[in-house]
Length: 107
Length: 116
Image (cartoon, rainbow over all chains, first blue to last red; front, side, top):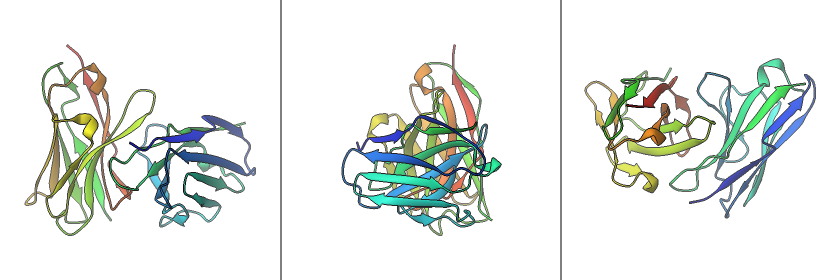
């Protein structure tokens, strides 16, 4: 299986700051990577797919980049509603696997 | 608007089978997409379990070996998860999700505890 490694595991930031979360795949997954946001007690919600394509309704302050084995999710000008956990997932064939998550907290 | 809703027993004894239902509204499960089961363990690790396709074909995570079965009832627009021989390690929140290679639509999740 392809292993997905996220960093950092947790991150503390203030409203208005810019943050970047990274995800590394154990092998080349081209651009077959998705990002999800999960709020406490809720299901994950799709943010980005194909590494850089924003899902419908996702604010433009979110952006995804990368290819191959290294990927990142950047959030510009953090808003209060952006705090929660973020997960990457490869979609380069099955079994799909997820990163361990990054918990973004308010400083 | 595509919506998914899981339902299930909440508690299952070790060695028994768990059965969950996902009811889909706003989209026919035979029209397109793959209809998945994903679980999230205590500690938040996410695991893709498998899917049933719009055409009825299946794809399962090999980690679940021969314990898993995903079926559907097209007349009710529902799909189902059956997991045999459960242990305490199957305690998790179970989500149904629809999408292509990634997961556009999610249910709210149902918590399942395996305990005697």
